[in-house]
Image (tube, rainbow, N blue to C red; front, side, top):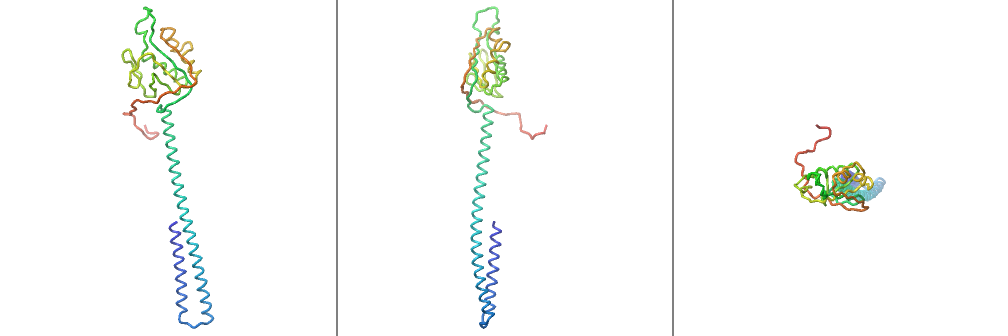
Length: 241
């Protein structure tokens, strides 16, 4: 665009130069037929110069307008890119448990056996961390899209470990009863913890654990609030081993 302006200015300069040269050439000469033609030529040159100046002014305005449009286009592209990146970030947060979610699902309550049956060993009468882990895996296999235990959101790095008579989840100790809430296909989730042969069914009917489940058409789950720290994994280019 700047080059166009320079070229037009050069054209105007040459035309002015030719006009001045023609005027100087005719100075001091007598007024004859050739002189009249020269005057007419000068007049045409002047008109051409005026038209050329007008053309240049119009082109300059067009260039300025184009520059504004280009800037607006660039700004819009930058804004669109920012919006797209933010959308991707929100989607990643959603899929990784860093957002509040709402939807249909089930609520599963699991607590220790309160039966006084002395034939059961004391270790078989309490809920262990491994029991919770198996139940979580069963729900994930049934298509659970979001899970939490006693208000602690479960994500891919969540730990469920024994802490004496309690269980530690995401670094925090929680007591029984353990309330597991899962969002997903209600029928699939419900079957995963009630059908004969499932782990939850065995906990209730073989070991006498206090297990209860109910459906919910609309429940909300909190986002993950623990410390998510990557210490050993590193990002590499695809294909590099």
